[in-house]
Length: 109
Image (tube, rainbow, N blue to C red; front, side, top):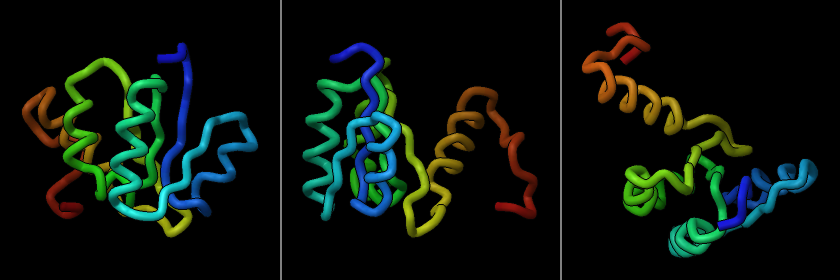
């Protein structure tokens, strides 16, 4: 794994802008390509940003990496908009850590 290496994986329209700031981008077109790409990136990158659509497609694979220190896989909104996948993950982690949902009241569930 390269130190401090960051990759971005998702649909072409969502990830190409990250190339302008020096990140390595990996456009994917379908679920199989998404899983294969994430698996390959996990060997080389410390942080992998994935669009929420890709995160949903590769959920089982991403969950396998959650118990490991690296890579950190972070869902980000795509050009299509926010699906709430990233926020749902944060909510689940907070609930797991403290045993209660302190982020949202019952009206927002």
